[in-house]
Length: 106
Image 1 (cartoon, helix red, strand yellow):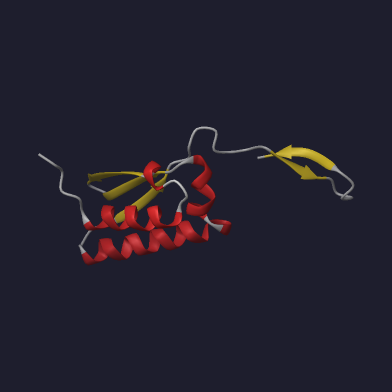
Image 2: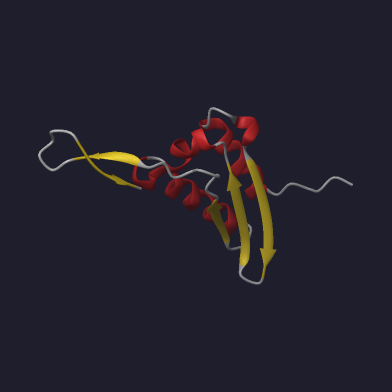
């Protein structure tokens, strides 16, 4: 028997698949407990930047919309964006004088 998809799960899948380059790699898991509903989102590592956005603005907006859908359905809904394996990349940092590369940072 196929599991019935809920409004919050369908909405999250639709929004995320619309903004990423690898929509087939979008996976959403839904868990319900006494604290409410937790939606866990996994995307292709290359799509993390598109999902999170500049300074987290896209992720914050998606979370707000998900919470609004939850309120309409009388549920507390939270979104967890799972970091993919190797998700954090060490990037070279410019030195203070701008002459070259300084230390590595996360």
